[in-house]
Length: 196
Image 1 (tube, one colour):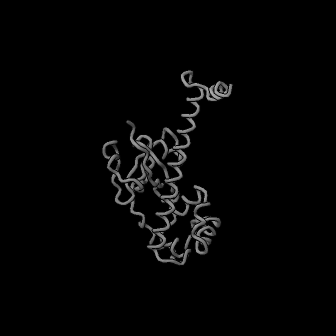
Image 2: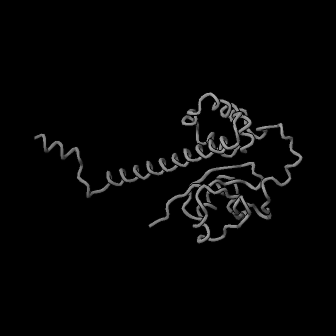
C-alpha cells in the first residue's frame, strides 16, 4: 500500500519563495521542490529542516519528519543559515515590505471579516502562510499568537483543498475506468429493459 500524501512547507534558502506541497516520499518532495521553486532538473539540490538545518537525505528519515514541517531547499553550494541571520540591520518599521499590495490588502481585509479566507485562492493562502508572523500581526493589528493561529488555519484550509482535489481526481479516474470497462453493465440499457 502506498504511503499517504503529507503536507509540507517548502522555502528557498533566502526565505523569499515559500510554497506548500503534499508529497508521498522524499523523491516526490525533491521533484515538486524543483518544480515549485523553478530549479532545473540537472541542478544539485538538498533539503534541510528549516528549524535547525538537519539534512533530509533518505526515505527512512523523511518518514519521521512531521507533517507541516518547514523544509528549506538548498541549491548547489548554498548552506543553511538561521532565518534571523543577517537581518539585524533591517528597518523594523517596514512591515510587509516583501508582500505584494494585493496580499497586504487581503490581510487587512481579514480584520473586518475573518471568514473571507474561504474565498482566497491557494496562492493567497500560501502568501499568508509564508508571511512572517510579526508582519502578519502588525498588519492585522493583533498579537503574534493570533497571527500564528491564523496562519495555521490557512495551512489547514490549504491542506484540505489539496486532499479534496486529490479525492476528486481519484473519483474521476474511477468513473472513467468504470465507464470504459466491458465488465460493467450500462445502466441506461438496464432501465430500458425494466420499463418494457
